Length: 209
Image (cartoon, rainbow, N blue to C red):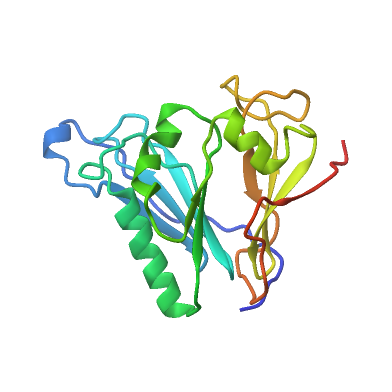
């Protein structure tokens, strides 16, 4: 696996959009779309929760990150952990390695982005970072500098750049305030190469702003 320039491409997927009767809905509880070999976009079924949030599972050479955990806590109705476990098992079958970990982050603390956190609380080899300010900001370093760019290294050249951004929740991170969690986006390609990664809080670099 070698890192290269990210390539924008059409999603090429029709997203499930609910049905007149939730009781008779036959769509999967979670729709999983592989954008590429190392990037999976998940969407919760509207029949399970009307918010139908999108979640993102990104694979690096040393660990994966799940961004947000959806709008439903109960695994019976929203089997997020089982889905993630299956996706990770399939990825590891294609890309064998030992001691592969999962990091769980959030965009902000609204209920439709954090409800599934409990499914990962006892998952082995998993680091769950709470979405609320007291947990999220120290992890990203925004408590020291709200204008920093926090880098989360997944290994193999895949790095997320996380910014404090304004949004629709008072605890979202913003480059000009000290309120709220962070937005993360891939800063490097989704095709990881084998290299070491950080396992603690991400390194922070000054922003250009």
